[in-house]
Image: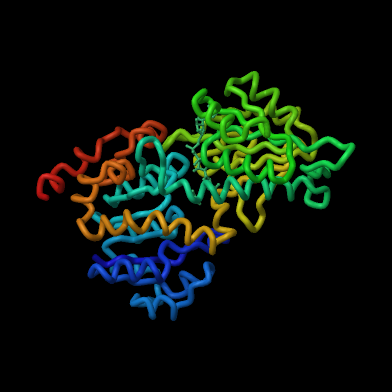
Amino acid sequence: MLIGIPKEIKNNENRVALTPAGVVSFLTVGHKVIVEKDAGIGSGFTNEDYINAGAEIIDSAATVWAKADMIMKVKEPLSSEYQYFRPGLILFTYLHLAAEPALAQALKEKGVIAVAYETVAINKTLPLLTPMSEVAGRMAAQIGAQFLQKNNGGQGILLAGVPGVNRGKVTIIGGGIVGTNAAKMAIGLGADVTIIDLSAERLRQLDDIFGNQIKTLMSNPLNIAEAVEEADLLIGAVLIPGAKAPKLVKEAMVKIMKPGSVIVDVAIDQGGIVETCDHITTHDNPTFIKHGVVHYSVANMPGAVPRTSTIALTNVTVPYALQIANKGIFKAITENAALLLGVNAAGGEITYEAVAKDLGYEYVPVEKALEKELAAI
Ligand SMILES: NC(=O)C1=CN([C@@H]2O[C@H](COP(=O)(O)OP(=O)(O)OC[C@H]3O[C@@H](n4cnc5c(N)ncnc54)[C@H](O)[C@@H]3O)[C@@H](O)[C@H]2O)C=CC1
Ligand SMILES: CC(=O)C(=O)O
């Protein structure tokens, strides 16, 4: 199979979908890799590194897309890339389609086989989302602390406090991978941390992990309203896989937060859990102020720490990509239920139920959308 690696074009997205080590993994088993010129530079991998690993460097994105059987990316294609879609092209990347209706439509219309990293699932875990959630969760506390500084628009709070002065309060809604990693960092920074989740089992696990370093609360509108009101830093970390994030923090709750408080809505890639986080921001201009509260809603947070993120991401994506390359997409999804769950669009249909429901498409299971292809293997 010919694997194509375009350069990422989203604002300040410095990750790349394959490292030179990943190139070697593909070549060793007989595949070929083409990499767009400078695709790895932001992550510290030069064109020479890729050539030495055995990849071919190609000057134009259009050629990479046109030649490859499978395109591996990091972020969802932007509208300028939709022109490269074609029937049967395998696209393996983050997609977050519930928040990207135009992309969903383009993938559907063009019959791309689109496998989303974030919905590949084993036993209710999301192995291709986890490392980036670890990065974003850790960053969320760090970024929140930074924007709480007066010179950055915040109320001028040091999360750790000092002897004789209260610690800053951090409220984390969603206690999964992002939430747990945000909590680790916030505790490390000395903050007073509360985690809210809908799952009693998860709250029990968090209590076991952190003991009395955190408070846990069941997710309900009253608990959320009270914890948001007292938060200096609010971190949004809820996920319902594939679906648009629920708007758990209403505008009225934001209005009564202290001026200069900070919201980091990590879940913005799925639409965000805060009503006032009504648009995605970029690393170039990451915050906006609404009702006196600093809002941070960057959808590719790990893109700012690309060396760490690229290696962490490709550690987990390459084994799945190798299965696709070695077996072909149809056999790979038939034999690996985790990968099958990653297929969001195929055969001109939307094949992930939560995405279809949120975007108003008929849900067509992969087995039906690819009936002929799967029967032929
Ligand atoms: N902005 C960015 O750059 C990045 C964003 N993310 C996003 O962060 C979000 C969280 O991801 P993960 O932590 O990996 O997901 P996860 O699945 O590990 O955790 C989600 C948690 O939300 C909880 N939850 C569900 N409904 C809830 C509700 N109504 N109230 C409170 N809690 C609720 C679940 O019980 C679970 O513990 C996702 O949208 C993910 O795509 C991840 C990485 C980077
Ligand atoms: C998860 C995701 O969308 C990211 O790492 O950018």
